[in-house]
Length: 134
Image 1: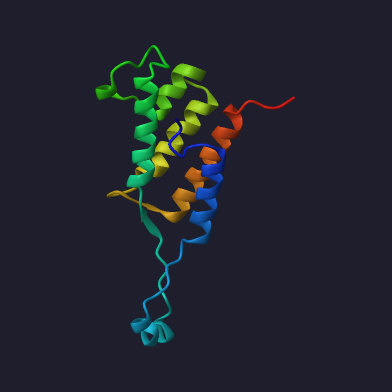
Image 2: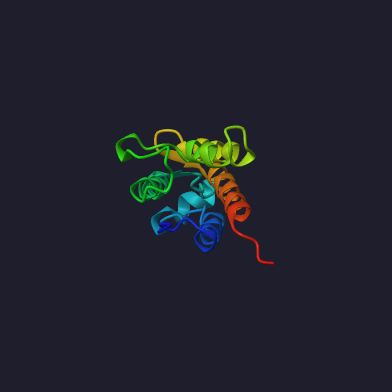
């Protein structure tokens, strides 16, 4: 089970992040908006992303798919998993580490640009590990 982390879900999330990064101002603020302009929201809560990733990693451990990781209480990071599967210095392990940095945010909030970049990295990883049709 991929818990929404796969090509269709990743591409859908990318378009949602791109399309919805600005929030409409409430009706009562229209006068202020005319004078000062509406402030778009640039920071978002990343707990859903982090939770989905943790859930996927826990499933990998529970299914005993990787011999090196057996204890769900000591769950590895995505970059740890990729380092075991593809080598510690592999491009995929480095991309996974960068993805984790981007979604770590600051005080559980991440900038929209970081989320867009994280989405692009995830799409790139998924494209790289998805078997190609002949």
